[in-house]
Length: 193
Image (cartoon, rainbow, N blue to C red; front, side):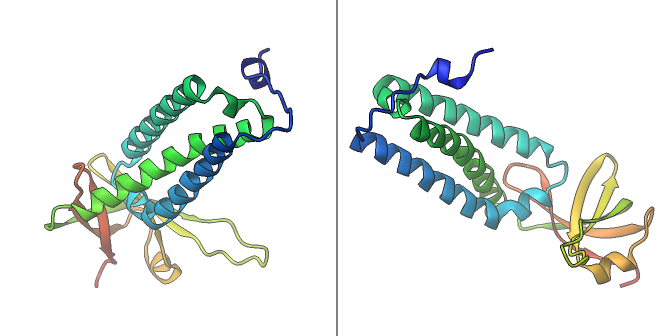
């Protein structure tokens, strides 16, 4: 079985190339920016109807960017792969960074440039879930799975709302059409409100 060390042999000579160090630091910066963008925009991906398409497209674009960067580094700066610790951090940061940055950016663009018209649809609650309890036995995550004519969405809601909803009951979801064409949930209304 071939491992990464066979493809990119290590030569830890102790010499630090300034360009290689900069490339390593830049990878961590891209990863950090990606995390920040993703944290602020992950709700829009989560609340998108049939959101598997976004995850697949965003991840695919991120992997293509990663492959392009790695090919460029292998041709232009092959010494970045010489030191094992730097090679591992470069591979990790330039793999994960673009993926989460693309996903977060897609969520931002989709909601920022969304259609202003809001549509209301009744969804059937197919399942209610509770997240894992913390170390004190307290659960903070309450989820509902909703469907409407093949459209699916999973929403995290507060406990008071979760308690009022029943499986196979209905909930009104207010939807906007995002820039990329999919609908996302802006708010919901409990029955009899």
